[in-house]
Image 1 (cartoon, rainbow, N blue to C red):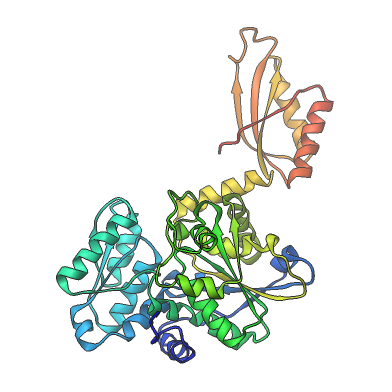
Image 2 (image 1 turned 90 degrees about the horizontal axis):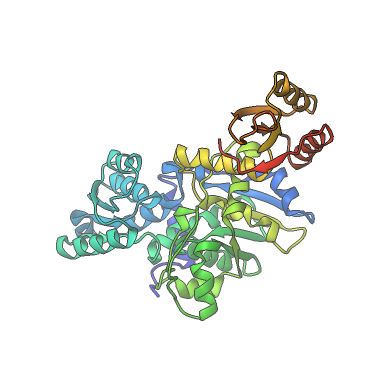
Length: 409
């Protein structure tokens, strides 16, 4: 353990330092998520999705770089990242006039590469996955004398991330529970360590994707373990191995670990957009998605929304899946005799039940006997499961035999 970091004095210094570059992400009280948590709990959101560069990562990067010696600053810094950490390091380095080299996998979306370059960093594309990019970054650090700023397994970075807890308690001193997303564990290390220093009785709950629960596996094993593979839509927390250096802090200060399936993240995205008009990336939604698993009552709960950097293609896919998941969009197949007026008849039934037709597919070749059967596939918008069932029941009652089929838009 590095005694220069993750102490009350270091956190206080970091809180002052990061104020030079961070935006003031005030807590947002949520009626909707408070109702979801139930049992008289009050839920507040810490919207780091609204932070500069779109995520909390600038905190750790800026504080870590602020602690570099003059000699280290002259040589520059390097890191490996395909996401939020890349932009955080690039921005922080630019503020200090320090050269920044970011090694990104070849598969990194061009928009992320360009954003990182726009912040003044030199981008090196290497490998197809993060691990290969990280290995190359380590090699360059060794050969060129750069200081490697790890995305999470660094006590200085974790101290900077922990300033989130400092701000939470400054604004809401009676916070009982903090939910924090976990990938490699840097954010959770800082938040949990500072929380226990300030309020030992408060609970810190780490939340991981079900398909990338490396911290849970490591805590259960009592040592850092590497998952054989990860599979989750929460790409920012799709990490196989938690930080080796920070693991002791996580083991000592995190009270509980909750894992969240991807389908709950899809639902949480829709909830956040519709109720708070905010875009939060899947990893940032872990904390609100975990609320329904929370076992507490009459508590003040803060959910950290860690970032909001989501590309438009992913966003549209998540919205579509969320609408399908909640029966607000569905596709039904009915068989009609091939004669005039049948399509109008079905449309009238649906309109009578206030269903909104999005798409129609008419297949005359579903059967060799076209007089007996023509398939009509109708994609509909409904208010939810109850409304969907009502539409299906009315179609059934009027002589059709509706079958639900897989929805595609």
